[in-house]
Image (tube, rainbow, N blue to C red):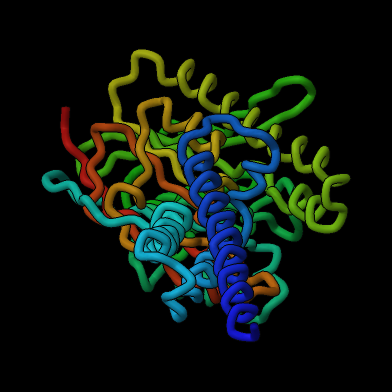
Length: 356
């Protein structure tokens, strides 16, 4: 009788294990599919793109533990568990395998949210920023959050003279464009809609005889929406939805503005900045619909996370800083820098310019 009871208990436990593993596999597969395929999803789907990746890796790893007891799972279950972990480590986490372009005039570009108002609080804050830029030696640097004292300040700390040794500089509001190549036509544009406003900078760069349009922009931070969702749960959903919608509206407004500004323009376009959204988000997809492509997705390697290391978790888990290029611009490589000098890691792309 004891043997029969043990046998029934073992079968019941096996069924429970299969149920739990099945739920985990189904949830992770459906979530990943939705993140990849949905253009504009429900609020919780957009929120899921900002969840630290251990929240997805841990369940996938736990689903593998029953493999230590093969009698509980058949071969099909074992394969499904392993495939789910592989799915999380690749698609869910945004693993990139490089497919670099070749041919063209090489230009290295860096985008960097420097958080200058935080650097100003440290005696070596700006020296560390300068060292980070010098380490990668870009030909062009675009910076965001270069406010003099605090976010929202109308003045940049880089308004006069050279910036990190670069001879050609345009600094206005929170933005800086610093270049080894001549700049012209630099302008701070303001877009307004429904009482909201977005500012961005556009310059024409003469890079080794090839002109390109360079745009840098900084979209609304997700911090307030994420904090509301974290602290208030479902009650914070409305705050998150408003926060996300603002970024989406900014993206759409920028697309409309650029389509108008650059109409009939045959110069290649590079758009770089802190866009505060992962590439799979509809915020970035709206920009990609201009015919742009993400430099890291083209020629990066690994995950390319540019933000998160300054938070309590202590590691980067979001790729929210981007360099987007038009089809005429090749990408030979793309990578992220260090995270010590600023809350954001810089993103560096080796671009290939081709004359028309």
